[in-house]
Length: 147
Image (spheres, rainbow, N blue to C red):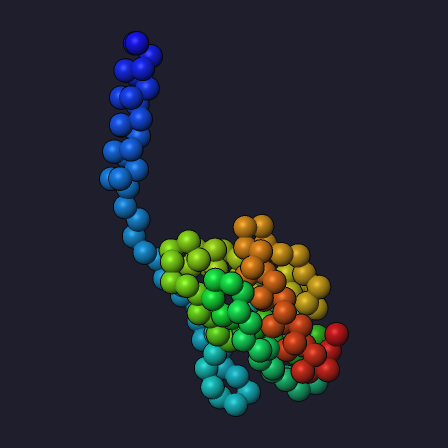
């Protein structure tokens, strides 16, 4: 009987704590990228290294990744990726989706620059975003005649 009282009181206290918990919505802040046509798109990873030839930019198709739509912008110089960023991102607007995107997209951009291709690892906990990113990235690279 004594344990039952303790369990009921602890459960009630835990429930009260959960109900009192409030989160503040966060927003995905993505810096614009200037395309070759002067239009603004999404964020970009900083350019890395120097490559020869004129810079060429392509935007991959919009990919529905179950929790939203994204497309990737790629800038290459010669055959080297110098910039990878998000051209368009529209998620389902939940705090969880926004948090996942804020954490995973910079990692995916960095991996693409390191790999110099779309052959990158997905981010744990962001499987759908990772697949959508890779798909749009691969198509953008294909449009530039790479990979």
